Image (cartoon, rainbow, N blue to C red; front, side, top):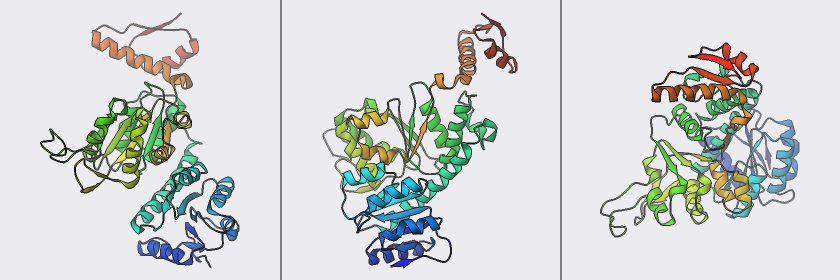
Length: 378
């Protein structure tokens, strides 16, 4: 079977099961989306893709040669910006992780839930558009191009490297993507997470910050999922966990790589299924939060050493923002020095008199700015 609509369509579905192709088409059209292109012969896929302007391809994993995984590799090598979703009949973690490593946006397990299918497709198309916007910003990394510069007033930054970070924030904030923020201690990861929350459609909801290093194995489920009245001795009333407390808003998981390996599977299920059970309760509760995670560690190294689940990382890392270390953005050294000197002067009620610099180049840059004291070099 091969059905390519005359009007341009962003979605191509590839599966040797014609019944499934027609079912997916019906789901998309009934939800108001454009009619997708359909192909049952995987050998035709690359030729069709090269001639068209698809944004997203849904690929069945098990097909006659070339199979879904091989096609995924070919697509990502030739057209890396094209988003791909793998469809599989078996919920196999290793295959899912491999697909993510090759660049798949997500994977869906048969039988496919229609509502989840539409949500996943919309998010994948959203990411395609987002990446195209970021490609434009890579050529324009100035603070003057920001849409809402006032949102970043709390962060002291003048270096171009931070201009790119701020542009990334503005592009991803309106989406509902889970985000991983990396950077060394003190680079402002939580501050950036709060800015993302404030710029998002969830800004009126709560921002709940949690330090993952502070949880023991025994308290994790109670703190994150909550409990029902009478769930255990001392549970005299029901309790909301962090997921419910952050409902409609943002849950910030600080130092996420500190989460014990034995608890990461429970976190994965909640993030993946977007539902939870309170301890002692059989009632399922949906999770309506955006998750922003942060770490000062090399998360790839943590995965390679088996300390962090790769499948959990892919669920949390729908978008990645790295905050460069101060040594990589020297243009921020003087502004930050001024900022902290002023704070110290105010706290100690002492006048700010001198800032001694060892670089005349740095001094010449400062003279163009308004200052609150006198300057001299050493």
